[in-house]
Length: 72
Image (cartoon, rainbow, N blue to C red; front, side):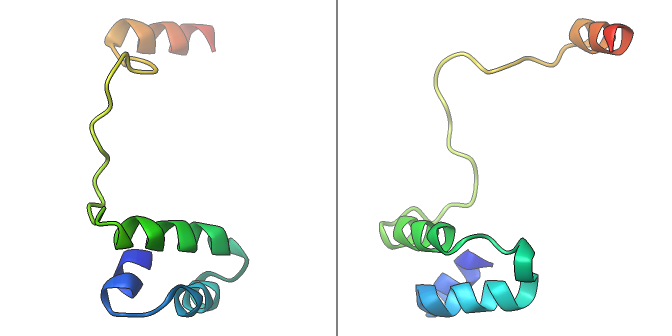
């Protein structure tokens, strides 16, 4: 929704108001809207996760799933 607001030419304050109208207390905070607008303005317009380097936080393999189910 924030990306849509950015693409349609709304400013950050208008986007915040629209989010609050749509989601009320469940809306993201004003800072989040401003941060995303900053990202979009700097050319980061992809909504996909960026590739991360290094070791993954966890790995899901059948052995891990079985251990989790047995222990808890």
